[in-house]
Image: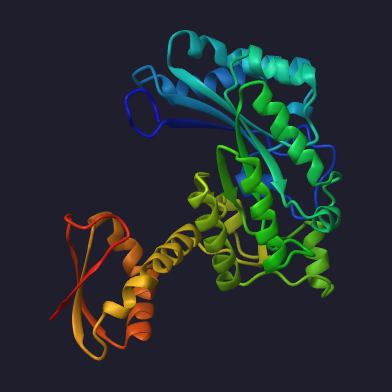
Length: 341
């Protein structure tokens, strides 16, 4: 949250593949982000921030360097990019800086550079905590690298985010929930869930074409992410993103070959999490009746679900027909009231 109490205004800066020691089997950041791979210079960062922040009141903005491996850039490049942000920090227009990196790309010199230039949050592309899944993905590190990275970041006062990718080669429903448990034990400040999709031009696409890899369906991915989201958030770890927000380039025909891509994937997962909270209320619902459902206004989209799939689930589960869904602000979040129509 910004100092005004509103959701912070985030200025994204994309560095696709920059600093990466190699390309993992699932990755094509150029198509995911829609940004070229040419190295951004400090002057370009300044122009991006001027355009994004020029007309905004100071205080509250966050600059987020996404993609690539920020802490494997040469030190002088890290300093150049972060230096470009400093004038905006000095006048209060930027109050937070976020970078993304690999768990095995942190050393004391780079950590000190991040702290010296005011970086507040470091997100780690952990993807999995299962050794075999990481090996098959070509990550080049094991789960211990993530544990060590979280400890090092915590020790220097950074907030820590962890990105996970269910459905990679070698992953299973049980293995992914073991990964979730391992992450819960690390107590990061936030998490993201990005189910693996098959993008043309990646090594994983070749595995898929050769029949060596079966991606998750949308339904399978939503079920795994819903359980993960529930467990993480019950442990006090907010899930700040579920599913890719792809660029127009990724939406082009033939770019996504297979996997759980859905334009409203995050909504599907949130609705599934919400339905799980309703299960203990269902015995109170009269069967074979026509009913109205009352819920807090903010819960109604979750109750309805994508294209009213939530209401269809409710009717199939209870045997009652839902005639209407109406707001009732006297109810706490996650609670419903049933009224016969």
